[in-house]
Length: 329
Image (cartoon, rainbow, N blue to C red; front, side, top):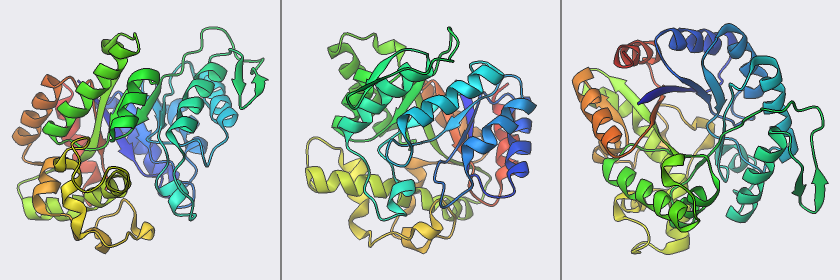
């Protein structure tokens, strides 16, 4: 299983770049960042600084969206980085959460997301594609460019879209039951679409906190349940509180949710995530001593997960990077 590192682009940018460089030296395969340009610094300005100081690491957003960024701009940025550094970027994409909601806007539709996935890949790899009625091609893209587009999602329709259209699947939680359910759904959709299910890379992304103080670890990672809850709330609105289409293990815990403060998005101590119970934090995250992390990673690998991407947003980022570096060997 590959290990990736996910960071927020908090200033100063050099600190993030230094951590990514160190992570590559420890065996991490991917360097991901949030993409929410109001809450944090602009990631596409930082990616070349990571790429020029590393030699193997693949970098990209976890995740961008087709609402705040023009599709052709996304494609051109990735193609430019590939022209300069080789095929070492990846495009994680979704409907949009903090990047749009912090501006009072709604996530995009799945139909628009599907169209953007196709257009971004085609443009970044130098092919002509119809973009909302206009044929477009980036003429300077060299032959041989390759941009994997991985999609994040939770609900049945989103998982069906991943199986039909994406190169990879990003699941932002590490509950083994939900990992199994979503991977099976993606693979079934791929097979129904005539694709090889094994061609889709499966990535689980979640916070990890290494240590024996579980109470402290839970408090440091509770924010993640609140973040996931934003997407889950949309599913409850669409499918209802009790639906056979969506497991209760995913939706049941948000009954106590009362709004969300995006000014503290992705940060420990976000008071609007206090509704998240300990058992959800334990299911969604990787907590405890190194042995517990090894055990859960092995379980995830057995379910078909190809990469675990570590959300390192708490008070021991460097300790987590070091600990996971030892797990890559």
